[in-house]
Every structure is written in structure tokens, then in C-alpha cells.
Amino acid sequence: MKLLQVPTANLEERIKEELEENPALELDDQGEAGQEEIADEFSSEADTEYEEKTGSEEDYENVDVSEYVHDGDDEVADYRTRDDNYGEETEKQVPFKTEASFYETLLNQLGLLKLDEKQQKIAEQIVGSIDEDGYLRRETSAIVDDLAFRQNLIATEEEVEEMIRRIQRFDPPGVAARDLQECLLLQLQRQKEEGRDVDTAIQALSKYFDEFTKKHYEKIQRGLSIEEDELKEVMQQIVKLNPKPGGNVGGINKAESYVVPDFFIMNNGGKLELTLNSRNAPELRISEGYRDMMKEYERGAKKDKRQKEAVLFIKQKIDAAKWFIDAIKQRQHTLLSTMTAIMNHQYDFFITGDETSLRPMILKDIAELTNLDISTVSRVANSKFVQTEFGTYRLKFFFSESLSTESGEEVSTREVKKILSNLIEGENKKRPLSDERLTELLQEKGYNIARRTVAKYREQLNIPVARLRKEL
Image (cartoon, rainbow, N blue to C red; front, side, top):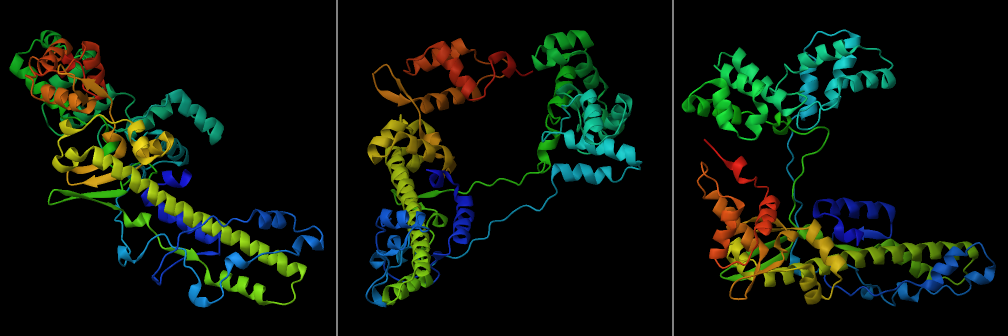
């Protein structure tokens, strides 16, 4: 189960770890033809003997190695997890960005300031407290305590505040703000220094921030005594600001994340073709050297206690290698059988890419089709991706509950959400549709749905209520 959840991007690293830990396992770089099924060859007798190897000489009398060796070299099996039909695999280079992280960008700018040793420590503590969105969410008093307890540096809140103001001059504008209001005001202040006319926008955010977040534009207009056209211009200036200044500059001490698809589905003249990412199908086999050692032991006449201890150790490593190869193979089988069942169930979507063509599908449906446990299907659905002509999707995207229409037909809730999203996208933003009106429109289309269900689906789509969708 743990191996099943390993992402494709990390599988090679997991195999490398196993290769380093177990010398009886090796990559099959020669690509020899032929493949035999891996049988369950764990010997409980051998394991017991190995655990009790410090016992009497009788414990080593019956060491059976026949299942590990063959009469002739030509019959030695290569335990591999793929055959020659895959073709020769070429090593793929995964590109990575080389840009500086957000944290490094701030430290570089910090190096341009002329600071004494105390100021440098204070500044580094502040920069280290900024989160990945660019906000300083730690209280000034807490930073003072951090400096005292962690760096044995006594600083006042005024010294910390002064350094925060200097860091707030860094790029990107808005960095080191304590909340959204301060973040937006810092950006407007920077624009004002550059000669732009943003005084009214600064006044609007300073005095009427709550009204702005709730889109009570009439109150802002009355409070500022401005015309509607001027209000529109002010709102345009504000909405163009960046609420997450750190989001556009690398990441804080973390690597860029890339989605490596586990499956590929192609439409070949109306016929869907499913392939497993070749990185999921490594060629592994039992080490030739370890098999040779087993043969030498079998052919030897005199078998002392030390030799028998050594051969039991070798058997344990070979068993572990066979287990790992079998686990990789089972992983491939589970992935392919699960994705095949999903592809067949959602055939129309993979042909058209239309979300409204998705059929109701729950974990139990796929578990019954594949004879797998529901927990196994859940692990695959939550951790694996498929690349299609219409984009890359996590497998759990294709799972949804059912909803009945007026005709009694069961449709996917994903279909209803897509229609709901289309209705909201096409609404008049000056008069957005309420949940009641959305319910009526869906019912007119034949979907038996309650207003509270519409509200739940809207929230799941991260769409705000009608009042917050209103635009000038």
C-alpha cells in the first residue's frame, strides 16, 4: 500500500533506495528477453533458521537452496517487471526552474542595506518570519521574544517596527504587511511615490476597507463624495493590486512542484488508448552474483556453520528482492486495472472532454469492477494523475455522487456543478443571480435540486454569494 501511494516522480528514488539497501536486487540494463511470473518463494524455514543462527549445529543441517538455483545457466530466470514490448527506454530529463526563491530574493535585498550586527539579526528574524504569501503574520512582541530566547538579543518593539518599515520598502511591493489592508495600502503608496494619482484609492482603503470587502460601493461613494465614474476608476486601481505579493516570486525554502502524470490516454480515431508512464515500469532482476553464490554453496561438499550462516543471509536478501519486484509488479497491475475501469466508465468524457458528460461514479463502483478493496481504489484516486488531450486530472476528479432528474435519470453532481458554473459565468455582474434564482434555473433544466444544495455546490466551486460577485 505504501508503494502504491508513492508518486511516479518519486518512484525512481524509492527504487534507488532499495537498490542501495539490498545488493541482491539490480537493474536489468541488458534488456534480456523472457519473463517469468514471480512466485511466492519466501521460505519460513529459512527465515526461522536465520533468526536462530546462533543456535546449535543441527540448526544448519537442512538449508535448501534448490529453489534459488537451476541445473543450467540457460534456465536462470530474470525477474523483471516489464517485457520487451515496451521498447528501449531512454532517460528523461525533467526541467527545473533556476530562479531565486522568494526568501532568497528578500535576503539579497537585505544585503544592500547598511546595518550593524544587531540590526542585521533583527532584519533576518523578520525576513524569516514572512510567510510564502509575503505576509508578516507574527506579532511584533513575539518577534522581540524570539530574538531574546533564540538569539540572546535584547531588542525593543520600536527597533523591530523600524526594521519592518524598512523591509516593507523591498520588492515586491506589499511585502511584510500584517494584513490585506496594509498590503494593498503599501502597494498604493509605492505607486504614489512613482507619480500616479491614487490618493482617492488610498482614502477608500484607509476609511472604508470593510465596505470594500463587502462590496458596499454605495457607502464608499457617499463617504468619499465622488461620482460613479470616479468610483469605478478607484475600484479598478484597487482590484489590480496583488493580494499575495510573495506568490509570484519562487517559494520559501521549498522546491517547485511538478505534476508527473501516472497515465496517458489518447484518442486514436475514436478508440481510447491507455498507457502507463514508463517510469512506473522499471526493469529489475535478482543479482547474478548472488545466484552464483547460491550455486557454489549447492555444489560444495563441505558446508561449515559460517557458510550456512552466509547462505541464509543471501537467501534473505534474495527473498527481499523478489518481494520488492513483486510489489512493483502489483503496483503496475493495480494502477492499470483501476485506470482502465475509470476510463471505460467515463468513456464519453475522455472522448469529448465535456464535463457534463461525466457519469455518476463512486469508489465502490470501481472497487467492484476491479475486485480491489475500496481503500486501495481510494489511495489510487487521491494520489495519481492522468494526462488527456483536454488537460491533466487527478483521478478523484472523475468521482462524484448522483442526482436525479425529473425523468428519473441519474446524472453526476459534477455535471450539475458545471452547469451551475456556466450560469454564474454568464450572469449580469451588475445584477448577479441569487441562490434562489440559480435553483429555479436548474429546476427549469430538469434537475431536482434544493436551494441549500445549490449553495453547497457553489461553495465547493469557491464561488462567493451574489452580493460579493457584484461589479460596478
